[in-house]
Image (cartoon, rainbow, N blue to C red; front, side):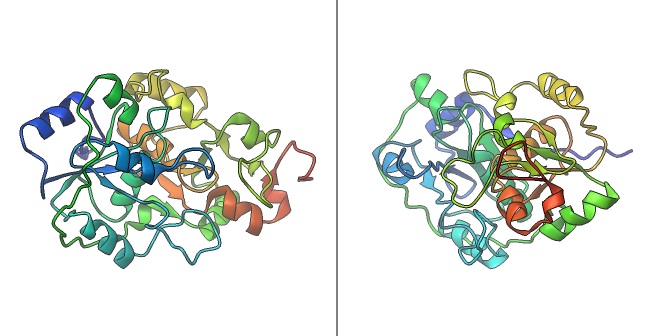
Length: 297
């Protein structure tokens, strides 16, 4: 069996600080702040303008998505993604490092990591520990906006890393894929509401396994070791040698499952982009499981 050589999914704050200090930022290395926060809590773009990693551009996940879709955070088209990241100075030869400012250490950065990969870009990494630890360790910040020279990026959708509603529906019968839901236990079970959601009850897709994404992170906001991550999958009886689909509410924290599996040597986890946001509105009632009062299934 030929083992695929995997590009490093994580870079350290020390590595990035040294790369910036030695002038490596440019067409070959770009940094993205992919922060996003629930409306009424924090303002991601405002915080970026106040302070960010030197040379970082702001990746607006609200802008780089399918704005015509009725579901949350759906992928943009190949052309839409290529145009957006090209304007951030990213070409097919750029090493992209993504971080966010969430207090957990990482929240939206793995989504952008997966977006690059699903559009055919291998050389992308998440900043381990995020902006939280960048600040804690005293690395430099700036309020100076980044103005990278635009580049040409060619996006090629890798359909093996993406699942749609019809494929997940078919999987209920075929069971070809294991299905892992990364939301909190209460939202998965249906005993806690979906935050900031109108007309969306909590619950899960029948047959899915719950692995809350916070369990992949240490209290200090770093990704757990490969050994610890493997143990988490084993505890949930998720077989990393078999096909796996990750889901959540809107296809964001599902990417933490894909990242954790990647760090265990499994690079082929597919994300159900519509996730619960789409499933709740389209799927047959008997395929939705909830202990809450509002869902009878």
